[in-house]
Length: 432
Ligand code: ADP
Image (cartoon, rainbow, N blue to C red; front, top):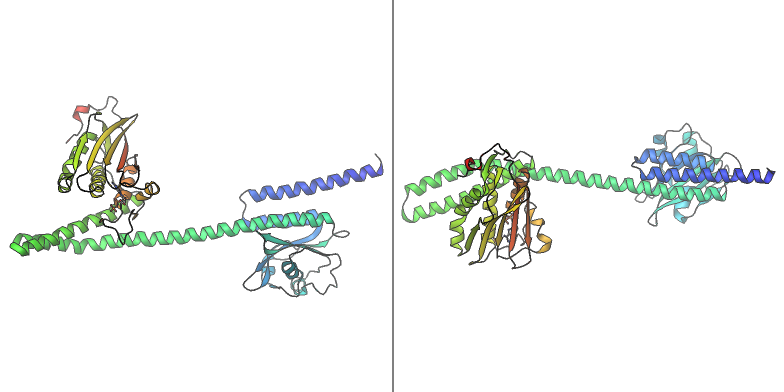
């Protein structure tokens, strides 16, 4: 091999190792490494690729208009010590790089007046040569990447190009870290708010129960003991207090569901029996609004393993809504739809309907399609959140469908069919 081909091969090998190192950095960058070790990895790559004694990353603090060392691998220096030395925008190379947004190449820095000597003095280091490039995130300069003291010869164009690549990788790493830091902060904040809300619900529902019990007791006593107008007034107080008790029960139920503590008492029951009981409970409200009600059991009856009281509560809620959100003289149908391994209970109304973009949101706590302040229906927006939580606690699903405004709504409860294989005689199932 001739002398020139030997040097060509070694040049190719050198370039190959630079590319490999740059590739390593981007691979590491894409893995989920913490910011600090990632920056140290980039510093080491700076030294290896540019053959420098040390590398540093300085971040620009816009508020204080100065730079701070974020990472450095200067031999014998503690990064914590460096972090405490602010680097001014005027009178430093890093400041010049940020101000002018251009790389600076210094082959002889020993006497250069632009070097901020305070850093060298504090860490007992001597900057002899320096190659610094700006780091930018989406066009905004966020800091500077520096290679210090070339071990042999002068900085090359390759060094400069590699530093620019490493600077953009360091910028991405810093941006990722800043974003996840901001996200962590927001999540923490959200967690705090959620706790305040949960605590509030717990305290309010608990503290309201006692005085409400007193009101209920005395209102009922007064109703019994008084006559005429006084008795009517007492009845009104009693009704309002009963309504309030329902609201408090909703809050308590919600809390239990949120804690995953729904406390269900399972028993095997026939769906038809559950629906007939619900029909009976809702009858007076249906009649009061002149609705037509149909319970359709023609697709057969099935057995489910459920907490009868809790499912009754869910059905009552959905039926109440169907009655409430359907103008007088509407039609409400409740039916059973058999599915493989599941039984679907559907409540179909001819009411005001639900806009497409609200079909999921209505299951969020306190969410109501109408604005809280101007709404013409009463309620707290908790019923469906509780209903869905309750059905999910039974291993089922609950969802809504509607063709839109004034097109009516269909609510479907999907419950797993009970496993009966030879264990239970369906005729002996609790169908009370
Ligand atoms: P509430 O009825 O107390 O407001 P829910 O959680 O039961 O709370 O229901 C949430 C919202 O879903 C209601 O405010 C209403 O906007 C909408 N909604 C529920 N059921 C129906 C229905 N059958 N038809 C139309 N809208 C409904």
